[in-house]
Image 1 (cartoon, one colour):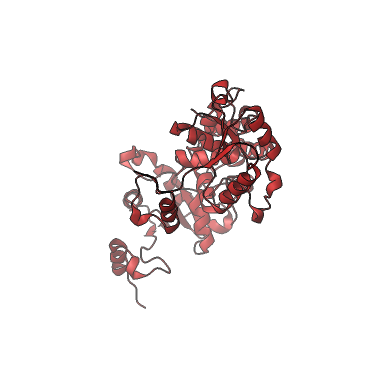
Image 2 (cartoon, rainbow over the protein chains, first blue to last red):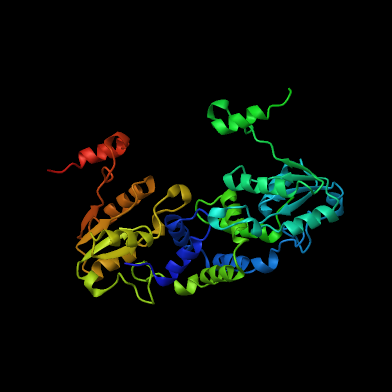
Length: 198
Length: 198
């Protein structure tokens, strides 16, 4: 016996969330059946209002708050540093570290030829324009340590060679609080080659 | 730096889903930021339409399909068997086994004094009325093998003693395809005491 049509629709739409398969979507859907209509209306309205309420800054690609970008402000521009990130979420994580006070530049995607994401997906002209107009002196590449992240970082490094800026990438090494015993070989090798005077 | 207010609202509403904590809700929310407005509208409408589109059968508590209950039909009533389940989802799982052809009775909750769910949460009058009106001869208790499930099963067993019906409960034992090595002691003990001629 099949689920009622509307329940199937709900499960299918919930499966679009990252990491949610059929089993989890079914669990979510049956849980939601017990919610009050008021709770359902609330969730529905929040989702429907997303396009109008959550806009990306046309300059840096980060999330605007109340119609203005909290990252594109004069105090941050004066640092002349630009941190390249893949998606808007990372700006909040980096901001929380308190280690970076410059501006961000959201790429929106990482290079991934297997998924049809080639170099044409990255708007290099926009990046060059920002580097020039903001008098950027250092570009920090803050991308994942994955195949896609490494490929994108290499591409950016070569594209920015003649841009007259210092290019840096986040350090690789042993995660804080972890035991050497559990660190994988690749990370250990990076930690060795990147060792610093102590 | 805090997330924009609407994003916080979205994360809070997503955290109401079972097993979804802050980290998962943030992951869902940022993923949804990349969705097309059309996809968001679709999800929003499906959720808002749930109270009108997904109703529970007033007789058995299972989900109705197109305004009628697929389980409360004469062909199933004639079996004179009633399977007591905790929530509507289980009816589909039991139906898929092809082992039961009678009717269902959704309790809606399990006894759990710790969460303030006492015997008054279970509508026994309704259960008695159904047993009488459907001429039920066997009641199958299909509840979880947990503290709450066991307590509810015991309560039902004692309440139905004089109802003139055979009472059975689902068998406990070794799950199909599992190795004895990995079966816990409680399950193994149940499997021993419930062993059958082979």
